[in-house]
Structures are given as C-alpha cells and as structure tokens.
Length: 262
Ligand SMILES: Cc1cc2nc3c(=O)[nH]c(=O)nc-3n(C[C@H](O)[C@H](O)[C@H](O)COP(=O)(O)O)c2cc1C
Image (cartoon, rainbow, N blue to C red; front, side):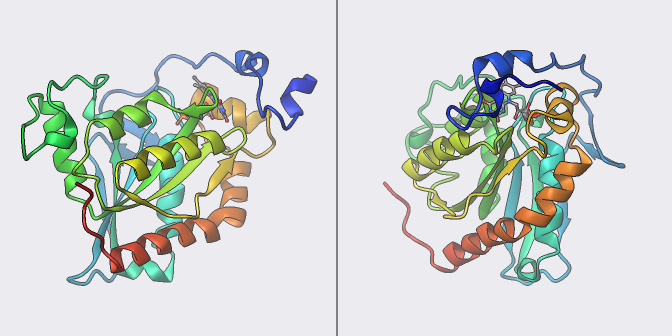
C-alpha cells in the first residue's frame, strides 16, 4: 500500500488527508441488543465478571467502553484489557464489570441541573441520566477505554464524563486509549477533565497503537470495528505490564482515600 509522506511523519501524527483516506464505516451490522466480541456475545446489559477470590473488601472496578459508534472496536479493546487484568495476581482484590456507554443512549448533555449540584441541590430529570448516575455511583474505580477522534477525545467519551460529577469525584481512574498512534492527545485531554473533576488518575496511561500503522488493522478497526490479530498480539505482549501497572495505581489510590473536593 502506498502511503503519502503525511501519513508516516511524526508531527503531526496524522493529517486530515490521511484521516479522509480512511474507509467509510460499513452499515451497522449489530442490533441494539448485541455487540459481537470474538466468539462471545456481549448483551446490551453490562457484563459483570467476578474474579476468583473476591473478599468482603473487594473493590468494584468498571471497565468502561466509551466509543458508541457502529461499527466500533471499543468492546474488543475492553475485552483485551479485562482479560489482562483478570489474569493479573493483583486482580484477586477486585471485581470487574464491563460497562458500555452505548447502552445508556445518552444524548448530548441535556439536564437542566448542573451535575455538581446533584444530589445536594437538585436531581436529574431524565431516566438516561438517572441510570448512568446509578451505574457510575456503584463502582469504586474506573478504567476508561477511549478512542482518539480528530486529534482528541471522542464526543461520546466526553459527554459520558460531563453527565456526572459527584458520582466520579475522589475515585481513582485509569485511562487506556487506542488509535492509529495510540491516542496520546485523547489521553491527555481525558486526564485533564478527570483530574479537574476530582478523580485520581493513574500516572501510567497505556496508549495502544494499531499494529502496522496505516495498514490492515487500522482499516479493519475504522471500517469494520475489528481488532486485528497483530494488534491483539502486540498489545498483549507490549502493553500488558503497563495495563496492570495502571490498575495497581488504582489499588494504591483506593488504599489511600481522599476527601471529596467541594
Ligand atoms: C471520526 C473519527 C476520527 C478519527 N480520528 C483519529 C485520530 O485523530 N487519531 C487516531 O489515532 N485515530 C483516529 N481515528 C481512527 C480510530 O482510532 C479508529 O477508528 C478506532 O477504531 C476508533 O475507535 P472505535 O472503533 O471504538 O470508535 C478516527 C476515527 C473516526 C471514526
């Protein structure tokens, strides 16, 4: 495949020219109720996986898929991260749930109340907000799985963050981004938002770049929501350690709770 020089330079990492060369996503292949993941099916409800040895003190950690388009690769990235974390010896102290923002069908933020005022000075009026609020409040910490769109955070990721404040506040979060070059700019922006809102973000922020640059894995992810075997293998081999490290930093933060910001 011939790649123009724009596509292999480091600065900027990707040009509009090459984004415009990416294939147009194919028609939606999934229904509202199922998201195919490898040989499994993830239903529209969150999947809850309990590690083998949950104790009374087991922390509840949500692995959050934040891309919502169809098709999308986000669920495959979340599954990979989930599998890596479950296999880690340090996972015994946690229960992991995969939470899919797409299932909450959040419109662009549409609440009359300011999230920072809930619940002390107001309540959400919409069911979608109430459900999202209850979901996020029910976890002790988060691993955000986020793509990079147009050199920054995807709207679906930011919107899901913006809906809430006190449900997130003071809790630890890890950020795992993915993209043609790993999603560095999205990772930075998400970190700034979360820290500004009072979350404690793991210093280790894994950035997963599709194997082969502008090759089959990128085209498969963009156009068909596929996670290529080469990327899967490369991420497992090269990024497992830092994914586990970002989770260990969550555990450290949980062991050292802080007062919520007012
Ligand atoms: C609107 C749009 C903009 C994109 N912009 C970027 C970008 O700036 N950087 C990048 O690394 N990848 C970019 N990509 C490619 C994504 O990394 C790739 O499509 C990935 O599959 C997105 O995650 P998702 O499938 O979970 O939505 C873009 C994709 C889309 C759909």
